[in-house]
Image 1 (tube, rainbow, N blue to C red):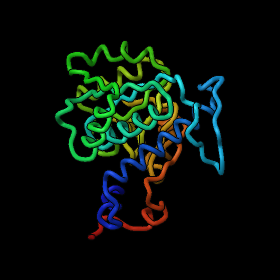
Image 2: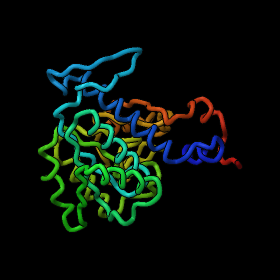
Image 3: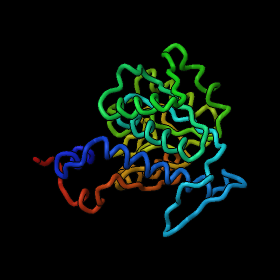
Image 4: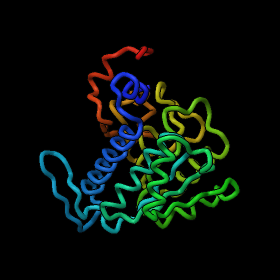
Length: 239
């Protein structure tokens, strides 16, 4: 809904919103790695509260696990920015790539043009996903976002279970896959993140007492539209 508002009311393109979201999520990931000592022995440069590109991510092995929707598209942008900052990034697509469309497809195409390591995981291979992820230092969850309605479908549920079973730290993009953003209740298997980078503002469901076991620490990133303007407008609206 916020994306639609930004596009229809303010004229910001979906590609710009996705780029802003992914870049700002990457900033947050870089900050948390430095702050929590996961990037041992590496230095960063902080000025005015912002972490500038440095070697803080150099040598970090990061897996981005992406679905086919806009949340996956955000993940593709995150993969590109983290790789540009020195991380060794592999993107795992856990749904049929032919179902990726629109802005997400555009960002996947950019990754492929840049010769980024993109691995398609077929439905029959999903139960072996955890084994492919364990050599990494960190997993970015971009499987599914706020658009999920009802319990996760079988393949998506399997992907979530596989990611959780690695025991690796997970950073969720916008919302942990499987968590209802309005109630904070899990929709079946749900990502248990160490940190969630959410966009514009915290989701209502994050206030639920049980939500923190899935979100971990929550950081808010902008998408290029002031939060106070977005939140002041009642939806639905007409452009």
